[in-house]
Amino acid sequence: MRRGHWLDSSTARQLDGSTAIGKRCPHRFTYCLLPTAYCLLLLLATGCLHRSLTIRTEPPGALVYLNDRLIGESPVAFDFEWYGWHRVMIRKSGFERIEDRKLLRAPAHLWIPFDLAMELAPFPVNDQRTWSYALTPLQSLPEPQPPLTEAGTTAQSGGRRGNPVAEGEGTTESTEEPSDAAR
Image (cartoon, rainbow, N blue to C red):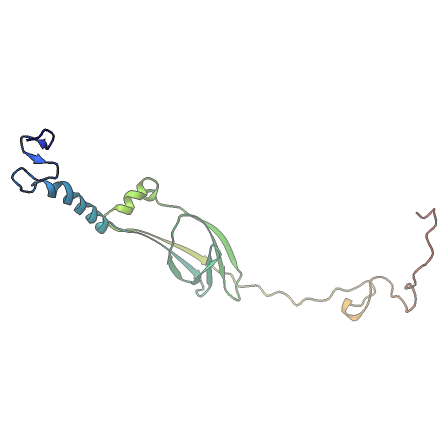
């Protein structure tokens, strides 16, 4: 036998994993296939993190925008991807528009470093939130009235501020240069 050909002289195992008699190593399954099976099992058996947000309005049927993107008509439920500040805008004809900025705070079990464990947990993790808004009816504006001038006529009727000017008066332009005293 050559020196260095065998890893362990007591079991006569060669470098390629076979024994001196030509049989395969009985521990090959344990060393190679079992960890691979565990990794596949972890990938297949991991749970999922499901985040959903529901926005409701009273009355329903309003258009809901989240971060300047149309989500749909209320009540609307959708999956969100991140926690933090969000801009909400709600519009419906006949009602005042609502613009709001809300903080969507992550629960403690989804803070760093716990969030990685929750992503890999073998059970599903659900985080469902609901925001509700009440729309107020749009107040009708009174019919606008044209302003009155000092002469008692309305601006739409052709009257001007101050004393009415007769034709030809006050419309002439002076062609003379101002005197030195006026400068």
